[in-house]
Length: 324
Image (cartoon, rainbow, N blue to C red; front, side, top):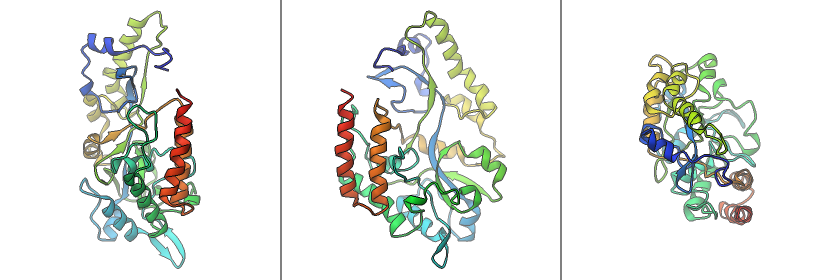
């Protein structure tokens, strides 16, 4: 929409109102186009690790923390998987790998943790078919195929596997989406932690926000409203836990010290330095579906990670070429 001229460039308004963008949580390039800001965030989210505290205690395992690596995750998932004969009663972890899944809570995080972004910096070519990209997909595949610590691809959206039902010990989850429900239904102690590190810390954010119509006849009035929404309005929404605020001064109002998850603030602080966006483009739905499908095939053992990413690279580049 910014490229087509439908959105108003907010940069002059931000500067005139002396809005400090450092007062807001990082959202990558979600609201930027060619270095200019065309929107501001209102409802923040980020991917983190949900864990069943009771199960960790029963297994005599230390709960996840900021020091965790992929290897810690893999070992804990294996120990927390519960089998009865050939039947799995509980999987150690859940990481959302399925055909056409766009990767918000799965492969985009593993890529970023291994120093890989799906596309190049100007989002014109695929950039994932690298040794580090292959390594990330192989890690996911090994958890499913070798360890059998996460559900097979064909069962990924089977309702039997549910963190709230205690059939999953850990869940790659989009925070704060599950919190209100878990407070109501969970009959066990649970909390949150940052995603484990690969070569670096990283987690995906997909923040929602507001923009102004470039054809508006009341641009200044629209900006006054938008300015309120992203600052003082954030305090109102945070205090009522309507959304996790993007505006940093409003975040303490969202968090309740006596309410689970108790470790949300520290998890957010640890995760913030490594937040990445999902590299939106006009054909984003298409290229993420193609890439997600090939990754799912590799995780399912239908293709090698090398073959899957090579095929995906060709498909994604063809899709991106249509944007020019």
